[in-house]
Amino acid sequence: MSEKRLRGVHGQTVEALAGRILAGEIGEGDTLDLPALREELDVSLTALREALKVLSAKGMIDARQKRGTFVQPRSSWNLLDTDVMRWQTQADADHGLFDELTEMRVIVEPAAARLAAERATDADIEALSGAVDRMASARDLAATVRADLDFHRLLMAATHNAFLTQVERIIAIGLAERDKLVHGLVDDDPVPSHRAVLDAIAARNPEAAYDTMRALVDKSGADLDRLR
Image (tube, rainbow, N blue to C red; front, side, top):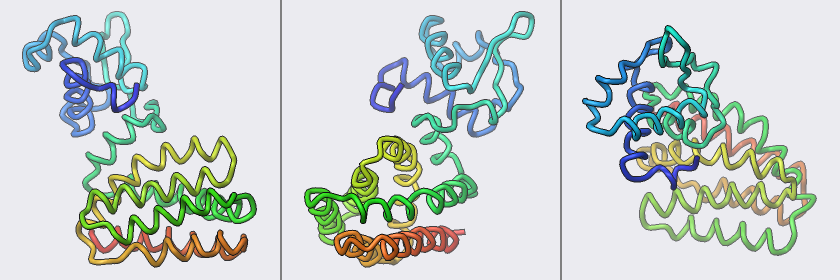
């Protein structure tokens, strides 16, 4: 279930339960007191059960006879689910998840930039250039974050590899939350590092594309360190 579908009473109930789990109010292994939760959340039994089904599908909870409904260990969660990723990034006060995201980006994005330099069409490069231009002209945090995310999505699309395009959907959730922190609190211009990647791809220089994207990701991690 995507973020856009988490609306109304059903969505609010899912978000509330997920928030409690991520905050540790309901810990791993804890059994849920369903009557108490229904009363606290002021929802029908049907709405509560439907919300529990969503969290169960995401691996966050399970139910067993004699034990009831309980929170699964984090190792059982579907960490690549977009909602689970969003909830974790929003709740991760110590930036540990962002560190893991940076490690994933180091592995994936420089190699993707190298492929893009080899495979990008003229239309791909024009789209990437447009994202950098929007980043440069952004006048507020929301516009900067949108342009930044667009660039990274377009980069993956420029690889013309369906698996990498799927991976970017996961990275984008964490990247959006990371960008809100960094672009909002760190006095830094994201345009030069992104334009360097664009220029390398446009020049059809795979190694330069790899190196400039690796430098961009390394800088992203350093920016997070500045916020600790």
